[in-house]
Image 1 (cartoon, rainbow, N blue to C red):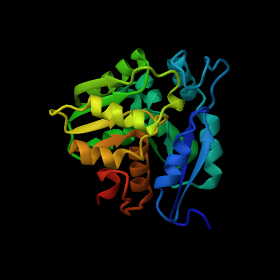
Image 2: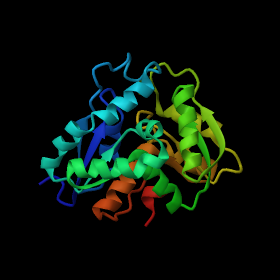
Image 3: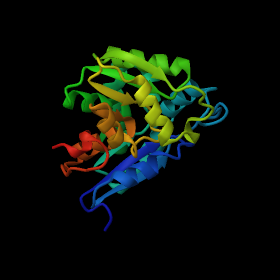
Image 4: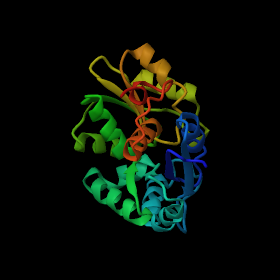
Length: 245
């Protein structure tokens, strides 16, 4: 039987091709991952990974949360995760607990968000001063910086990936370069925000090269989901967060 240790349900944006392969790549033995696509709404607003309409799409995902969340409930997942960091940015840090509570009620299980998982991960690592790298347009990037500041973190550096036509067409090499650009000596950790940006294959190399923890939305999301599901196995090869106790 698949998921004999735990089943994780994941709500993923309609056009996102990154979350599924990255979670499959990292999930430990006996943990299965199951997906439902978020509702894009009646007016999805252009290219799913493009800058135009991105905030509107994020709000539409939140408004249409009920159907995909309830669709995961029959699987009896140990935890359900919202794999869209920008939705939390648009929703605001003050509304994060209510969002997690709503998601859990809809799915009938424990719940987490990508942004909430990153918060927990940074606190686990004792990192308060962060360097933030984002692949978003300027407006969403500004929301992200404001979110982390409101959550109690000191954003000592913020770098936005230039020349992004479609987040979902970006590469691990570009994510690596983004982290290097964002990092500063003052930062205790580097955060690569966004589940659409491929990151997990370069986290280990970045930590070796930068000499500090590097957190990505998808990595933190799996870490938090495993904790909530009671699976404490170290997962190596994807940064110190998952490799730790």
